[in-house]
Amino acid sequence: MGPFHTHYSKSTVLALILVLTVFIAAFGQSDSRQLSAILSDEIISPSVSLFQLRQYLLNHVAEPPAPSSAQQWAAEAKRLREHLLNDVVFHGWPRELVDAPPRFEELGVMDAGRGYWIRKFRYEIVPGFCSVALLYEPENISRAAPAILSGQAG
View 1 (cartoon, rainbow, N blue to C red):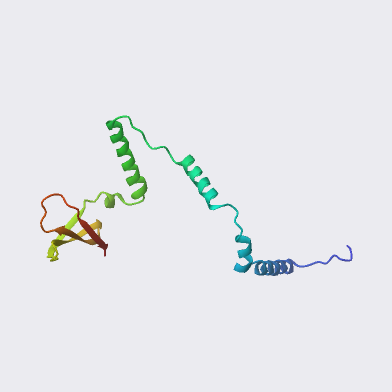
View 2: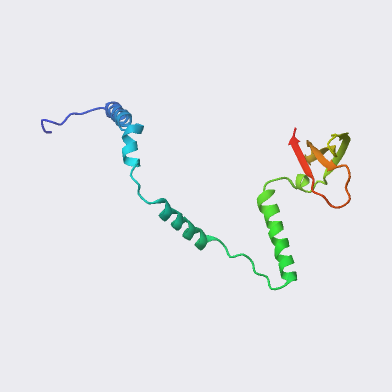
């Protein structure tokens, strides 16, 4: 054994490593003033990054379907609708909630006094969870007209 060889216990070595780790972590942090000088330099211009983003998206977006007949389009539309509803929108939902028939209840009509009626509705979003809605309807309808449906969960 040489003159510099010393035998330390494992606990002493682990304690020293812990102290050094805490010391490095404490003094290795930066504050916003130190980082602002580094981060203020422009690395890439916004126009270049926008161009690169567009190129990436154009190269990775799937081509839209191009059916050659109405029957092909109807079949593709059905496939897409089923995929979006079953695999995206209702993914993980119990089938009894997804397949439950809608329930609407009209709660009355109010005269707004401004040329329209307000119909009050309650509807079941999913079994056991209801929401309310107001349908603003013109008093004198002679043809198809736009309507506003305002709802709130509750």
